[in-house]
Image 1 (tube, one colour):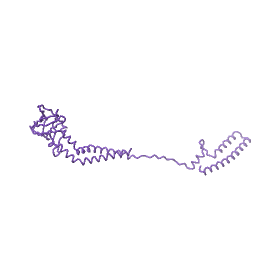
Image 2 (image 1 turned 90 degrees about the vertical axis):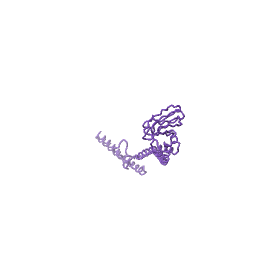
Image 3 (image 1 turned 120 degrees about the vertical axis):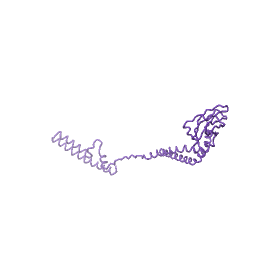
Image 4 (image 1 turned 45 degrees about the vertical axis):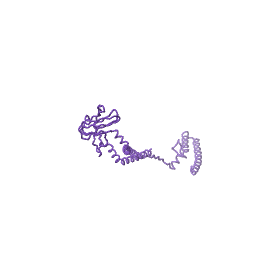
Length: 274
């Protein structure tokens, strides 16, 4: 999972770098073309001096913006638009924010401020009247925007700019996440087991689960002493003493034989590795 995430981060980083390089390579040429296509002095429908009127072919699906030089006080009612029948077309006043969308001149300086926008109801010739004291320019915004999008260099520069930098930010975040996960090392669990010594193995082999107090071969001797004590407590007669003596001698004799056999067998078992 970690290797897969790292692979995707590398791909995003590479794609981001390529797009940014494309944008840098096309920035100069695309900027020149944008200025050329948006230059108000060369790309306008009409240029009206103070008190002048002019006729232009307008279409209903387009917006027509009237601009003036920055610093000139132009009021909306100083610009009039009439159709062929003499009917006045009311324009739309612009807010302060929309007026900040300035247009460039031939040197690229943003010196033209929009004043009012007109929208017509049908395709026909219309008449503009400049009733103010300053020069006005009428622009076809839809035509200008279409010329910008149709240019390949401008389009490539815009796409590479809009995608390259956001992908770069995402790639940086991805590298930060991968770096944080890399610092967390996996912990190993070590299980320690004690190795039993030879003495412990011998005691475990010769001991029983019920009695761990007296190891063999002293278990039977303990039983003989218990029997001896019981006989001595019951009776102190000569016959009882003789029985006790015979019992002890017989038990000790059988105990010696058993010990010899067990030790002999144990020796063979231990010698064979059992």
